[in-house]
Length: 465
Ligand SMILES: [Zn+2]
Image (cartoon, rainbow, N blue to C red; front, side):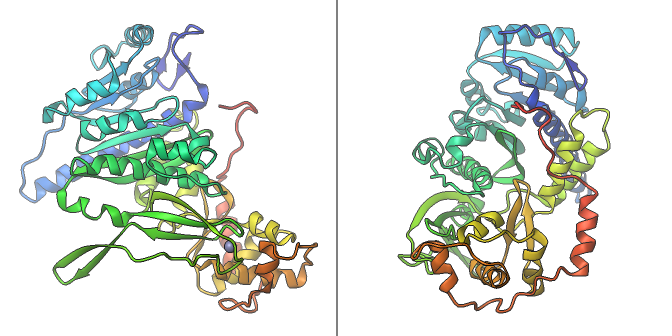
């Protein structure tokens, strides 16, 4: 079995190999390459400032390695790695790692390790030089049992890469299980995959905070059947004070789906003084002002940006520039393009098809819906998790103003009295009174440009993942 520059001897029934994870590994290699470049740039600029250059060993830990395939690819495809520890708890897996390491002739770099991943990381945290530049956790299921050790085993400014595949839990089907595992209550809704990314980040941050550390997310994505996040970890007692204000509870209406964020903390800056206070709230009344239904309470979630557009662009260029090396470059580049185009500062989104179905009306095209919103000066993007997403800085009331304009020309099929849709139609429009659905020339130009890069690729096979 060949993938990238690695060849894996794989017996059926042995350690777990999932071909759908090619994209995960391709993406991870590109991210690690750019991360190490970033570190070199930081070191170079420090040197220019007259500070002594820090010599970095380049050490990576793959905590749950299974076949060792990922570790071997890291060793072969990322320049200058000094050590990759490929760890697994299963003796059979470690045997297969050993065999594959020899077969690929990377014994110099990849060291097989047979240990409990948490124990290994807790040992590594004790001596600064034993900490890793990169800790990669790619479990089958949730990574939460390993987070406490992982946030301590990464060195200063190092990279923590985390996969979670328990999407049913993260996406609101078992919100109580989500709270138990992540310390956050998940909610249902079309934005659940983005919420899942933000819940994982919130959970990592809270683990880090206990050790005066905090995270800076570089990139987070939802793919196929998992979420994957890459964050840098820093130590700073003063930065940790900001943590509460970086996270929010989510009030979500059970009738119309309107959501409002309640930050967990408030920061007041006056001149040189910074005060940290409990936040004021709630942001909603007892009943939804739009439809009169009650709210569900989810979170806390990470409400700061979950990716850095510039870094995402660099990773995309990395993949695009090495098409021979990355089997899945097309699909991953499409995904990253969609991510880059997202409004980075607007958490969550509404789904156009849901708005239309609440009113029992034919769904406007994305472009028609966008036209009045853009004309009113609001910003709008899709989400990498859904092409139907309306991610915007407009208040939710403005979205319903547009839908009320839409139903004037598109008759509503019967709506039950007292239903959310019925009540929404009775509201008066305030933000966008007479929406004009004519698509602008500017929109057409952008649409044409964006069509040249396919973003939402179908799965290669029906039973993918
Ligand atoms: Zn409502």
